[in-house]
Length: 356
Image (cartoon, rainbow, N blue to C red; front, side):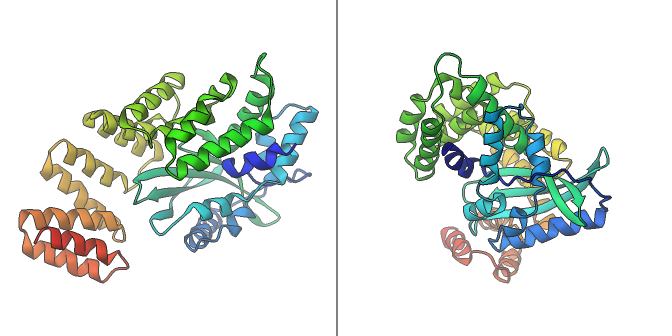
C-alpha cells in the first residue's frame, strides 16, 4: 500500500506500537513541564521531542478502525509515517509562533493547548494535546486540531471510512487520489491555486465529501479570489453547520463578507471555546478598527501589548496609530521599547518613514 507514504506527509501522522500499557498518574507540574519542553524545542525548529512524545498505540486505538486486513494495513502505514513534530517544524518560519498557552484538566485527563500563529499570513490555529503517563514519561494520547474541528485520530479514522466504505460504485484508486491531494497541496502552497483547483475538480465525488478535503478546498480558494473563498467557506459551513471549528474558520469568512460585527462575535465565541487567549484581544482590536470604533479598538490593542510584550504586530499597530495621530511622545516611547526587542527593525523603519 504505497499510498500510505503519500498520504501521511499531508496528514502529519505518527507511529504504531503493539502492546497496550496502563496509564500512570500524571501531575499538573509534569504536564506543564512537558508542554514547555515541546515549546522550547519547536521554537528552535526541532520537532523530535514531539515526534517521540506520542503514545502511538493509544493513538492508533483511538482511530477506531474496523477489524479487517485493510484497517490493519492502514495502521501499519501510519506506523511508518513521517513524524508529527518534525512536519510542523518544517512548516515553521520566523513569522510563525508555536506557543504553549494553557493547561487544564477535564474528566481527570490533562490537556495542554498550543497556539500556531503566522504573522505574515495572519493565519491562526490551536492544538489541544491530551496527555497520558506511561513508564514514567509524559506522552500525547491524541491531539484536537481546532482548524479541523476534530482529533487527529478521528480525522484518520474518518479518512479510512471515506476511502474504504464511502466510495459507492465509483471504485477506489487510493494511490492516485492521494497523489492528487498532495499535488493540490503543493500547488496551492506555491501560489498556483488555479492549477490546484483544476486537479481538485477532477477528484471523485466521494472524496470531495470528506471533511478534510472540503477543508483543503477552503484553504485552496483563499488563493483564488475573495468571492471563491467566501463561497467555499459557506459550502463548508452548510456541510458541517455545527462543527466546533466554525468559529475559527468564520473569522476570515466574515471578514471576506464585510460582516465585521459577526466577525467580532466569532472571535468572542472562539475565545470562549479556548477559554481565553490574550491574542484574541488583537482580533478584537482588528474588528473594532474595521467597525471604525477607534477608541475601543485602541483599548484592546493596549491590552495586547501589555499581556503579550513580545508580540510584534501589537507594537507595530500601536506605533502606526500614534504616528498617524501625531502623538509624538507616545510613539517615541513605544519606538524606544521596540528598538530594544528582537523585532523586525526594517518593518518599523518603513512605518516611521511613511508617516514622517
